[in-house]
Length: 415
Image (cartoon, rainbow, N blue to C red; front, side, top):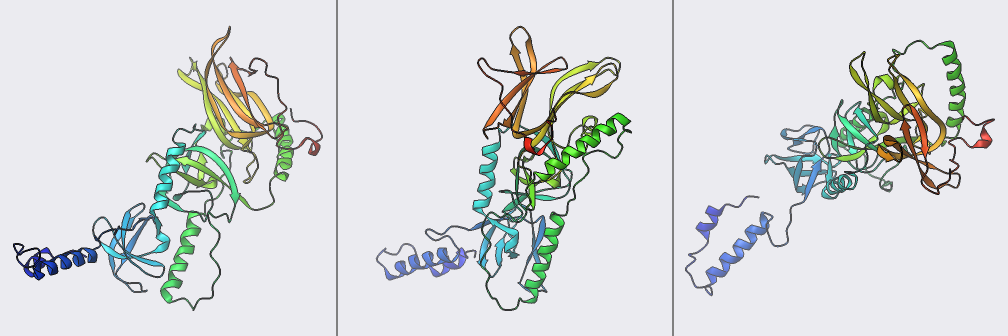
């Protein structure tokens, strides 16, 4: 509470009194009591929390009928004035005070956790650009029940860094013990209903097809190949976990935040020219390798490294197919220059240019895979024109790459 210094001056005796005068001691005690009452006493610190809701109102009371005393928005910092059951009375930066539900608030530790997460991953290599499909709040760790804070809105662009899978009900903490409580008051029933509606809205995103609707008609030979691919897809899907799993992506946004987003809330922002060749696969990551100039079209066209996987959450690998798309200068279209399938791929991948003896500077890319011994290994490739070649270090021998589908589950290798 604010201190009325004018009233104190009227009550406190003349300061010219001797320090030993009883009135002087009374004045000192009065000042200490006043400071303690307003929350500025020795050792007293303000408890601060952060708002997770997109926007909500402060209430003058905890009741079904209430008056709005203020407004708070996502990531606003508020000071706690009073604790209640599932509610806190807080003050925002404008000085507005009122009651706010606990489920809309997180502590200073969560805020600092997001800062630490950004610092730890601010130099992680970009794997793909993504676009938010719906509003979604960044999570501190992957899982629906984990702490969340910063709001991303529909259409926001993010940088995709890491992928992981967790059980659908995964949480950052064990569930609270079940306790017998008296029947909920009307205001608590109302709050529970609102919370359920908000969660349903936030997680309602549906998976979109990987191939755009306006796909050119397939030639008979292509359709035959797609049927073969579909049969292999079924084998890969059979290798997926039986439990209900969800994919999450660690992302960075333009505001300097990092956090986890449910994968189906993101669309990988891959160029349409290569996305239409996904053939039912899910594009996990993509990277420009180099560019060529198409003189007839008078524009530069990029070559792309594209990593793909089955359109299913919970797979033990990040990607199972590698493709390099080159631009055909004569036909003015993309073509597959390289493909490797059924590999146990692990992010991150990286691209760049490197000087090779007798060849000069050429584009190169490096992917990480699991070998047959279960170890993570790096494979380096270079792009020589439209030809992709494996690069071995001096003394290095080729490794046997683990397959996304074990060899015993197939009649023959897909290569």
